[in-house]
Length: 233
Image 1 (cartoon, one colour):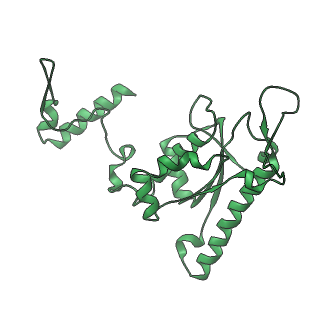
Image 2 (tube, one colour):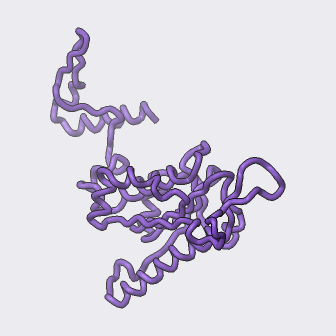
Image 3 (cartoon, helix red, strand yellow):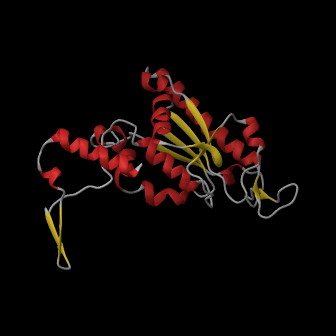
């Protein structure tokens, strides 16, 4: 899976992608993350990419042309990789399919199910991150995008939403997690987990691990986890 992220602030991703599971996934080439900054595709000598909105209103709007050029560059790179893979007869890339994702509070709600279907269907995702008052809507008329929302709220920019997509979808790629079956969404998981010590004393009170987890009776433990899950839905 390769994530192609259109963003004005690629360095915003450095910390999250440079740690833990995603870092190892990138090093092991299970996933790739590439960045395309619209400022690099503007004809303005000052690299300006925003202008006041037509019709008035506060803030600035990101211009269509540099965003489209950045998307076209990402798509061109994908097509080039497909041609190279076919030349080398690498079947996994020969059938490459691309989705264009537009992050917006008005889009379809992103879920684990959506992430799993996306990982199964596509090999390349071009994720478009908005900023300021948004991106000129004509981009959506030129590029067939999937409008996606990470929640019923407004973020300062699309970068945090893109990180959520990268994290959640990457978990669906086999080999990213040490044990593919460790995905909480693929098994019965309780919202509460425990580890040693069995008894944890704090300010005169002894906090104990639920007895059911100490029995070793897997069927009963699963039933207990189901009930805990249902209680939190």
